[in-house]
Image (cartoon, rainbow, N blue to C red; front, side, top):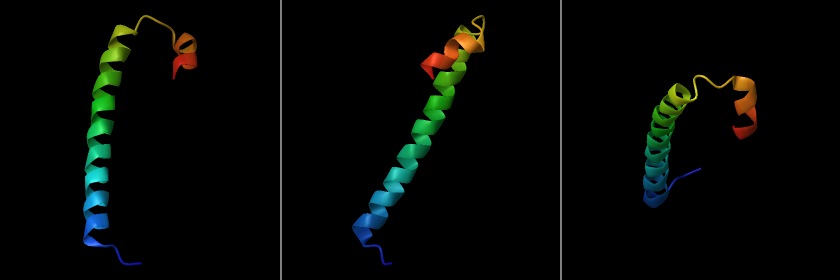
Amino acid sequence: MRLTVVEYGANKAKASLTRSLRSLERTENTEINQKLGSIPRSLLRDFY
């Protein structure tokens, strides 16, 4: 399977975007978890 230059570039961009989103999510989740630290996990399960 040969990738065109455009497909290759799009895949690279998608991969780096996915990476940034994941690290952003991790940061947000850490902040959220700190704020929700007093709430039992079992109550939060419905929201995840």
